Structures are given as C-alpha cells and as structure tokens.
Length: 208
Image (cartoon, rainbow, N blue to C red; front, top):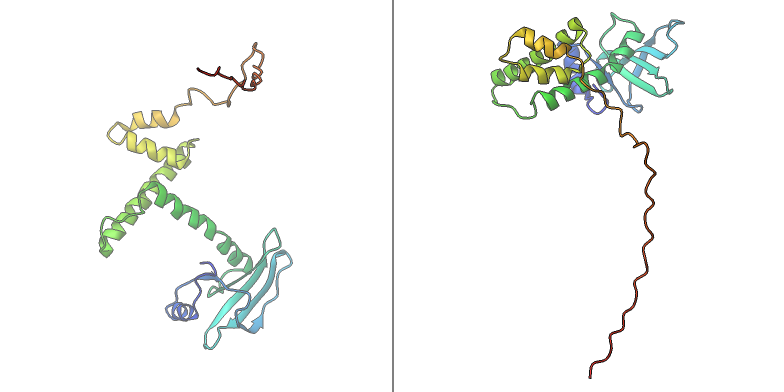
C-alpha cells in the first residue's frame, strides 16, 4: 500500500489480527525508534532497519528506510520480521506490478462494472477474471508465444467455439506482414507548392 492510505487504527488492527502488510509512511510520521539493526554490507540501498512504536499507541512495527536508483528515499513500516530489509524494500517496489495487473484486468476483462452487488456475485466475477488472466499467462509461458496477453485474450474470444488445434494455430501463426512505417516514394521529385498569387483588384465601370 502507498502512503496515501496509512491509518494507525488500521495498522493496530492488522497487527492484532496478524494480517501481514508493507505500507509506506510519510516523512513527518511521529514514529518512536526503539531499537535498530545492523545493515549488511551488501544492502547498499538500505538506510535504516529499526523497530518503532506507532504514535499514541502501544504497537510495535518494523521501519525500513531505503533509496532507489534515483536516490529517492522511502520509509515503509511492516509487521514482517521473518525477512530481510532488502526483501521488504523489494516487496514495496513490486506493488507497482500489482497496480498494473489490476489496471489490465479492469481495462480488458470488463471489471469496471459489476453484474451483482452481493458478496458471492462480486467474488465470482473476480475469480472468473483471474482465471481468464491465468489461462492467457499459462499459454504465453508454455507455448512461448510472442503475442501479448491482451492478444491471446482476443484469440480466446474469437476461437471460443473452435477446436483447440485451430486456436493454437492462430496463436503460432506468424504475422503476414510487418509494418515498416510510411515509406518514401522513389523516382519522383517532391512537388514544390505553388506560390499563391496576390488577389487583383477589379474596378467595375460606372453604370449610367
């Protein structure tokens, strides 16, 4: 989760319910440092690994501060003590892949609108979307298909009632042509635009 969401009430409840989380906190968060841990030499991006106490709460979490390749600093808190600080930093980096995954599902699997408002109907719609994505991903990995997952999903929709061999032939079909962009015409000189002539003033003779 990103820093737009942290609420200390939620963090306290997650710790009590043993729900694992990795969440970014703001620079001005009033976290009280209790103990610090030594940073391994190979962890060149880690700046701090410490146990902290949440403001006005008797809840202890783990604080990891690290920098990315552009030297931007991040502060994340977690209730994971079973992994290294580097793994915590990598978990937070991977959140962007999760966001891209849900964006892909909403755009291509029609999850913008739900077909029911009960818990069961929403779960069923989510499960079907995840199954469709998983099928496309498995086919792409096992067949080493060059098409994107979106292209494979389109082929599934087209060949839904066709035999499996026909669909696989479409997956492995090589493109009939490759786009090379707009080509210049050879043998012809480029046309020079004609200069526009100034309008002539026409004086009509006086009548009478």
